[in-house]
Length: 390
Image (cartoon, rainbow, N blue to C red; front, side, top):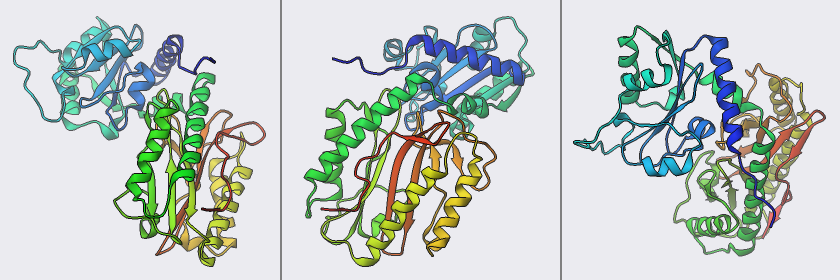
């Protein structure tokens, strides 16, 4: 049996060293990365730890080993998951029911700073994941910082910079995730029938993903039909699937921390003429976006050309957002690709080409993962890129 892709322990050590170099460059003495169950990316990137119920963090100074920060209940779990050996339990990382844990010895952020920095002076503490840090943790970090007259700053850009271009091992994990998603999509297309509910079809997709090696869903599975197919973000319901209506199908497996998603518009029976026309325009735009992409191209240029193509077809009013967002440890992560984007594409950046168009009565999404190359893109999913009428 072929060895499954993974992120070796040595790669985590390289990540710590790379982050420390960026901290020296930006003059940040300590970085505290934050994550929770829904968005564990920064913490998992540095520690392979994925919190549940509780939250989690990683503290690291300019030199020395990092410390994994967890809540009171997950020590044995964290010890089995993470290459970080030094683990500290804090009350602030407890679950949202806020137990007191009387008599249990727990660390404080003052303890964390002393442990990670030693006797070195700490003038600046950076938080990575600021947009998802709860006030309880933020205020506890600020309190500890005030005690040593240190400043608290955002450090999101440091982790984003590191995560943008994927390593060989990361790409292998992502390709495995997309393989699982494509196979699950094939199972769903073969088994879904009119009369099933959206949620029943989600069950088929989940079963197929787990049976093929997924550790979880990369995102909540989309089976959104009829008017619900207009949702750019939505959840499946008990609604019954009917012939002749649009079904927005988005299936994404999570493998070894890395996300994927395969999006296809589907209809039972022949699509109505207007629906088919928009689906065809969407598919053509989907391919055009990939034609516009290669290393060195400004991200904004891809978006501008995509929007010009949509306008040439007369469908500007059917467009909600630009054609791409990055993918990796999250199904949607930095950087987005928008007309305001100021970065060039680089080799081994990974994006979801996400072509979403909608009317008042239905919407459609073509979605596939790609790796940027010197000459264009390598598709990580490319099956069922055709009009799907079951």
